[in-house]
Length: 74
Image 1: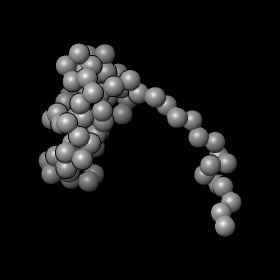
Image 2: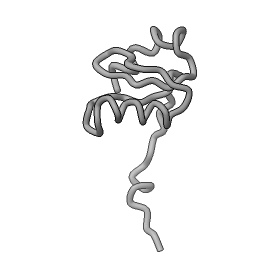
Image 3: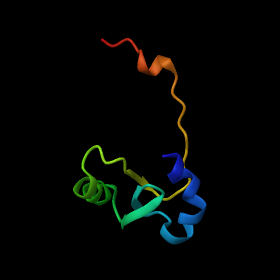
Image 4: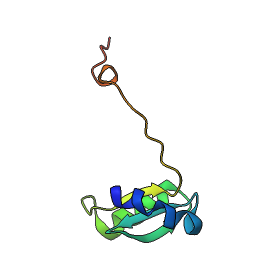
């Protein structure tokens, strides 16, 4: 994921708001939907292929607290 994030400045002008399959520092394929990108990555590399499926856009980190993970249920 770090390689993908580091590549965003280069990728945004080419693939803004599109979904990509990204592996080993390169865009493997470009798609209009997350589902299409996921299916393409799965078909080409399998479940453990090391690919990143992501939208080419500014990435927003969402911090989670441990309270969310260990929230009491019921």
